[in-house]
Structure formats: structure tokens, C-alpha cells
Amino acid sequence: MEFLTEYGLFLAKVATFVVAAIVLVSIIVSATQKDRDDHEGEGELKIRKLNDQYRRLKESIQARLMTDQERKAWQKKKKKEDKAEKKAAKKQPESDVTEEKTARVYVLDFDGDIKASDTDTLRRSVSAVLSVANPETDEVVIRLESGGGLVHAYGLAAAQLDRVRCKGIKLTACVDKVAASGGYMMACVADRIIASPFAVLGSIGVVAQLPNFHRFLKKNDVDFEVLTAGEHKRTLTIFGENTDKGRQKFLEDLEDTHVLFKEYVGERRPDLDIQAVANGDIWFGKRALDVKLIDEIKTSDEYLIEACERGDVISVSFQRKRTLPEKLGLATSAALEHTVWKILSAFRNQKIQ
Image (cartoon, rainbow, N blue to C red):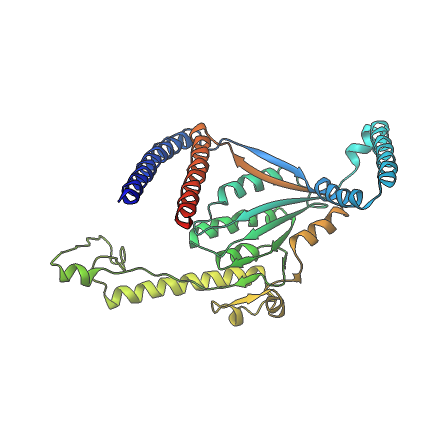
């Protein structure tokens, strides 16, 4: 009986804490949304030179494999070389610096969800790169991961990459995991598509699905009316009664969207047998290479490490500044997760005892 009383009090405390936490998070989210609306567009451009990152990794493993004596000699030699490089750079005439065209590879990242939410940051990053990129020497690499989503959202995301090609700048798409449906719509814009051996590609098709509660409402004597002005304003509805005519129009719209999708891919990859691959199916890396959905099997890391030997490899990303409510929200979320985990662990230990 005492155990049940303690257990009841324990559950009451947990429930009280969870409810309070939900209320607090709701307030923070509401404030975050308002603050986001007030500061929309604010953010900063993050620039990282990946040559340095890969070089540090290489030097780190090299140093760990050396003896203490070898490491000291190597560090001394390295400092001497770095000093000589800085000295040479200072002595180099200013005219030589301005005339020299250093090849640069600008690396952008896109991690897609169903709404292609990364499109805004991609747009800003593309705008920044296009303001400085040289079509004669430079290249843009998009590291792309997406299983697709809304047609209009991915259409806009693909259009951002089209801006790079329109400027005559070489564009390479690297796919390590998946570029399907809308994701492949973006990838096909590139001059060259590189994918890892088991990356998922293709899914050139269109799908739409929605539930219909009409029979349930009718069974419970609930009327639902759909009033429209325009014959095709609403073809299918969730709550109203759908007609064969409405279904036919909806299917026609899907087919038309599929045709546009195929045309878009076909224009950008003319060597692709679009009729053979535009059936909604997917292919893994090697199979995708066989049907010419991609051009090469290679991971993005392999490609970028090789690019470091050709010139500067620079990661470019636009990050919106987090507001105070957002920072508080993240802290609250982490604290809540930690507390819940501690409670569950304590309860599990008590049960075991």
C-alpha cells in the first residue's frame, strides 16, 4: 500500500512537471515566432576553408604516428615553412596578387524535408557565391540530401541552382545518401552528379494522397458542404463527397505535373533515357550509374579532398541568428530531455531493486 502511495505521488510529480514544461515551451515557441517575424532576414554568412580542415586532420594523424623526437622535428620544420610562406606573401607585389586567378570551389549544403525548408538559406548562399565567383576558374558543389516533397517548394529550390548554371559556373551535385523525387529534380540541374555506392536516386514521379471522411460523417448525420466558384476550384475534398469527375481532373493534374517533371529532367540531362527512368522507381548508386542518372561513383569527401589539390575549397552557409526565445527554447528542451531521462532511469532502477 505504501509503495502504491509513493508511486502515485511520483506519477503526480511527473505529470505536473510535464504539464508545466509544455506550457513553458508553448510560451517560448509563441514568443519565438513573433520575434522571428520581427527579425526575418537577419543572419550571417558562415565561411570555412575546408583545405585547412582536411589538412589539420592529416597533420593530426601524422603527429600521433610519430615518436616524440620525430614530432618535435616535424613541428619545428612546419613552423619554419609557415613563416617562410607568410614572408613570401608579404613580399609579393600587389599587382601579382590582383592578377592571379585562384581556382575556388564553393561548397553549399542542402538538407531537404517535405517543404524544402532549406531553400531560403540556399537562396542566400547562392546569391553570396554568385557575387564573387569567377565562371572561368570557379566551381560550385552542392552536397544534397533529400527524399523530395512538395512540387512548388522543390521547384523553387531547383531554380536556385539553375541560377548558378545560368551564370556559366560549373555546378557539381554530390549525393551521399538520397536525392529522390524533388531531390533529384535539384540534382539534375548540375553539370555533373556524383553519388556514393548505395545512395538512393530517381523516383521521377508524382504522388498525392488524402483521407476522406465523408462516409463517417454521413453515418453520423453530419452534413459537410463545399461551395466553390469555378468548376475546378476544388476537385477532391477530405470531408465532402468526391465525384468521378473530380478524381479524373485530379489525375489529369498529376499527369501534367509528371510531364513537366520529365521535361525538366530531360532538358538538363539529355543523354538520359527519360521514358525508361521516369516511372517513379529508384536506383542505388551503381545501378543509377548504369542508367545514367549519375555520372560517377564517389563520396563527397573523396571529391572535396581531391578538389583541395586544385584550389581553395570554401564552405558557404547562411545561418539565421537565433533569437533569445529560441536560445531559451533550446536550453529548456535539453533540460526537459535530461530530466525525463533521469526520472525514467530512477524508476527503472527502483523497479529492478
